[in-house]
Image: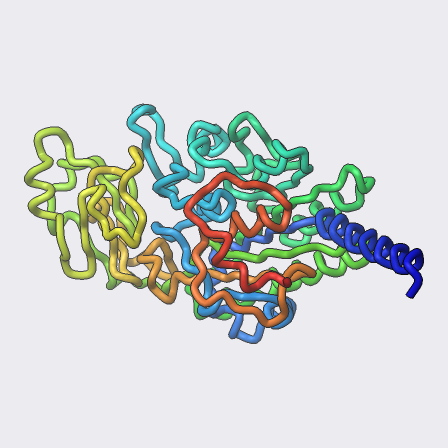
Length: 406
């Protein structure tokens, strides 16, 4: 072939490769969080859309391992920061901070949920993206209501649990109807109804199946809306934890081991966290520490290393973990007759706590499987899809290398 035509052909090929690279960099990344979607829910036969995305894309073998404790706010923040709760500071759904002695963080306290002071130990992916000049949108996500590090998503809404699943999808699609230069490169979408049904009725019930069906239909509507708009997106679909069946006869009462007036109880349920009152430390430790029937307790800093928990100042002095399916409470505050349905927060190695992970889009290899995936691995994956240098955390980009196309 003459030299000039060859040079022209090579130049054209190079331009095509550059165009493909630019196109890939401009594809939006949509992070979908389905609260309480246990990994094996995909086997129920009630989620055709999610099951199709799983078969066409990539999954975590046996589900994704959440961080400990396997509860909502700590794990949803782990997914977007790449940090275990002990490092990003959201150590439980209910917590105190020694530096803020008069304040209590709970999910129902809107003022605390929207205060950046609880979140600034970590940097969520939308903050990293905004700082790099990328537009972001959060259609709900734990932490997205606070100006973390002084930065908010470009588009966001205060959390409203009563907003229907389809309305959430339509709101997100509205942002992708804006002029191209105003559309988000990263968007999050959060659904809570699977977790709600799992808590109220239990993981293996028709009501939970109905919630799964509703979420699956909402994801189908999202796909249709994106296709109608000619948008090819990278989808990363995750859950924060699974769900285990509970019952009133599976309760551990702290009163049977200690005088509960001698402690300040901060968290209870699958995990109980408490601080002994001054002068009562030795007696409380003697009565609680170690393995008990259906419960094990540790001093903070002495939990098993695999749990990666117990060093942050917000972790109370003693942490007690219930056997999966059991709960820890007090006789004054816990009524066995009202205990039914499901719970989570247990040992993150328990199969019942395994969480959903699906990755689907042009960047992902069809049928790829991550053999052992941890929730801290999601943030570096998102960073790679967005072309961002994300803050170094506890996750490893190499753990998801095999699911990406060459």
